[in-house]
Image 1 (cartoon, rainbow, N blue to C red):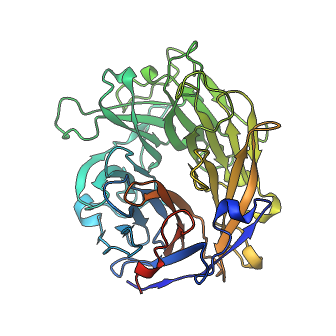
Image 2: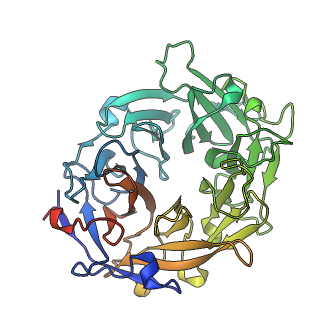
Length: 457
């Protein structure tokens, strides 16, 4: 593996330097250092880091799962508590899973309760290409692989070449057991629930359920998550959210909020999710972007006084990269829009919500804009970090903008982001940012012991 420690530049907003602890990215300073890692030798370099997901804390240090694309690759990226990079585990999953490549926009999700990671693959041209794979994110061994059959269109025809753009892990009591973990999959206009993904393919519990968006003009989907966004007097959560639009991204899109009980039909049906009852809610934008909900994230910002801890509705973060906007709908009422103005491009193509600063329990918005032009460098890419404020009304302030100190054209820094726990207790965090063929890991030495002395040479 070709590696080196890399110095990054940061542009700060109005946040005091002492508050963020990431103010200096000079390797010789005391505040932070950054490690830049390029692809494992067995993989294609350009698309290494196209998707990232943090793994749960299991032992000391930190660990993440990295997906590479041009030549398909799965790999690990981890550090021990002294900041020394662990040996990389890498694999090409194509022989085992028998597929051609990853889709242009790989779907990737991590189970917060285990080391398992799910992703989608393209099986080949002019054949049904969707396969959902689950692997152990540390060993890269296969756990499950399921082919989603051709999809029935509203006119009765069978449609091939549809892959899943969104996937997430969830537990849905509405399906009968609150201990079974499901995979929620967005495929075309179809919403698929894979019940008990860990069950063997021939098992009695394993099943595929699915339904499609009611509006016949929608023929694509971007993401799907489970969150509690509807007042319990209307529907006792959680709900399933799926963003749907037109495949060519040349028309309006929207987010459907569905009762999980509506998704009870066999997956290969052409029936609508709203066949028996309408969606609980439909989230739209007056700007009618073609990619509303390109990324969906549930969050908990302190925008309301919670009468009982954990009882408040989830806040919903959803992006529209074509507008350079990220929308936040607060569970306690009200909403906010976040935009970098003219400085970002494809702002919202990646997003994560995590508590980065001061361990104060208040999460920040970390938003990637891989086609921004730092220092005028075309598509060098940037990551924007926003802090939440509750008064005079809930909203967000730009804390800092991250980008390489010497951006390179088409580097696309920020095309993926994740935050992983770090340290023996998991109270620290590291931010990982994917770019073209590289991943940057940020260590905050003001928040935990300085680990620079243990880093790989």
